[in-house]
Length: 442
Image: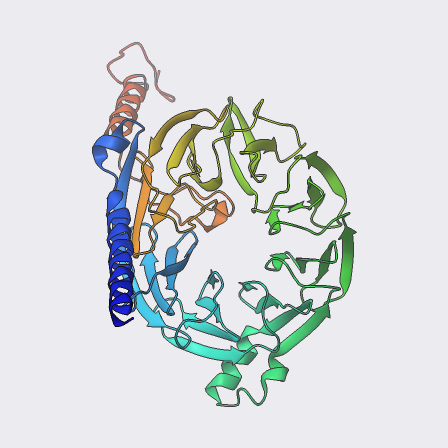
């Protein structure tokens, strides 16, 4: 009996060691892509950085990306902030206690907002210090969304809450939380069932989806219902609002484009398969025409490209090898295949023209805000790739956020202007032409 236990213990140790060895080998299988591999596509690695993890078995849980920053959140609550263009690690902080359920971090102009368990944390975006924390009234079912004034979050009981960010900060500084948490609430709206995706702000309204087969749009300040859009089955994918379009998918295989201001259907697309992943909208040149293209990923159905304005298919057939969207540039789309490698697609017809070995970069880093490709591994390695000539990022969704760039000295243009000025001087009256009579001369 004792010998059997010893043999079993030895086997368990061997299995554990084998699993650890396999994990180490797997994580080292895809190093940082080399220039030799990327040059053929006009791509380059701009930076590679390491997120901070808790000592032990900690892993990256989420990576949030916007035009300015990349935020990595580990399972143990370690938060690492990077500059999106340089990869410089700006700060490291920690939220929560131990391993708690977390959602994707969100960022506004001044804060990073993270839900860990039933607590909402606000971190100073510039320095990483915790500005405040507040206990949520219900168990959240979605990650938060935020603007500069309010934060919105959905709950398992079908409630959506709006909180006043300034009021929370004031009460936290006065040490009046959690006793006066109720006074930070701007409103609560109760839908029929669980909220399925983060609320999305559009102008003066907020939209959210519920398992009761409905999309609700309410006033951001007063929760008054502006319109309700009902489908024949539960809404199955996160809502996306792009300019004045609302995109949503239903379990009945329909994909809708609505007018964001009034909920009227602009067009619909029958996918034939359930769509459970968020669509991504990218503006750019497609077959010589500037277009806004929405990329849709039905389950096991590949990727379809649809004209966001009229709902017409842009690709004659879906790209069957595409599993997840990862990013886009002016020339390429980046998607993952079924084993996790990144496929490089040309944008006109969706054909595969190359790939990047990346099956260990398994963290979701989908980026439809700028023309940067990000890759992240569970061990904290984060890589940013761009096109060679893309020195300054292109912003797709919010082009007005791009900083004003300085005008650079162009020697060719300067020479051309000097030559033009010299030519003008040569034809002025009196420049070497004795036959020219100036005004007032006889």
